[in-house]
Length: 227
Ligand code: FPP
Image (cartoon, rainbow, N blue to C red; front, side, top):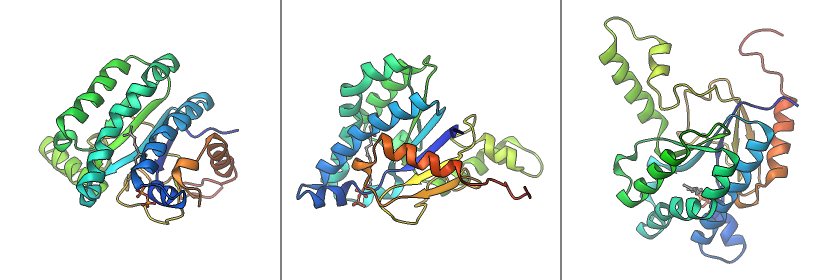
């Protein structure tokens, strides 16, 4: 089986999953957070190099304060529970997005995790936090303009994206059956295969990931050429 080098996931449906169980939305976010562990471990086992997860978008600040506060507490929950296992598996933690406005306590937890796992050689697990793709492209264009005298090239932009240095995204998965990119990695998904499933994120298990990769294997990727 051809394993995608870089998989990106929009982890949608925590709220709907919770509602279906008659539970509060935050319970869905907690279960969704625990599921990040399952999918990261499986992706690492399969030999995926990079897994990028949309954890908090620039638009998510519009949610009620109580929900935003809960979401901001989840990195601490996640690393407390799973750091030992992530270290054992050699998982490296990274982030993309603007962390400047993330509450300091949350930022510290994430920065500690990044430092602690910096030398690990297994899966790179990237959390997109306070991430928005248009803002990322504008930032990259501004950085490129400051670095270049003449015309800006695609390479100049690429080099200044948060994702610089990661392999191209081969497969993007969105759970919960919304057919949108929601301002996620618009540049980087140019040639990715897009997989949509009706499964809610907390139920998207290792078997579901394998199913998505099997689907990916049956796609014919032409990158604009003829095969
Ligand atoms: C979308 O579901 C999910 C989110 C906005 C949050 C996703 C975050 C996690 C799963 C936790 C990330 C973990 C760490 C460690 C940072 P939704 O609430 O929009 O679901 P709905 O569309 O059913 O309401």
